[in-house]
Image (cartoon, rainbow, N blue to C red):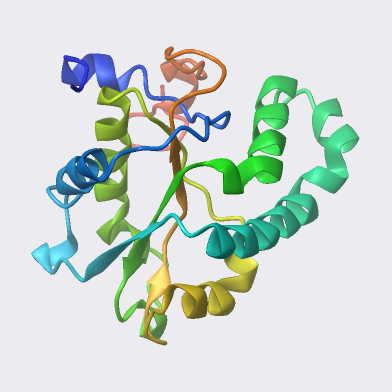
Length: 207
């Protein structure tokens, strides 16, 4: 049964979870998570989306290769440089992301939120039509004690991923959401910069 959380409790205790156990997740729970997701916002209520549930080890293994390539290109090969930046990623965050990149295929279930017809669009804000629903999926997962994170580092191979998932050529994956019961860490409020540093009234940098 899902944990009885208030909305505020869930909002303040759903960090990205990147250490995920291979323990199976039932079809019933996955359906509950997706039923919560599709209640989320959709631009114009068009619901031009599809949600691909991936468990196939061969498909996951191939996409995990693309993901690791993307991670190494963007972050992994620059570990020392990134960690030396005082404004950059913390060691704990880097290690967690590195772990996910090297163990992604072990997450028992992946969800790909897909926008149909998106490949024809030039709208840079296209994801706004699905990312609210993605967050609902992740909050529903939290209620079941299931960890998740939103990631896109496989996208250098979008065409190959579309083919592996059997998507039409005009569709785009908007993210990869690995799901799994947490293998490490705890549910806690993520550390963030103080509101006074990032919130402005009327105009940028107006306190």
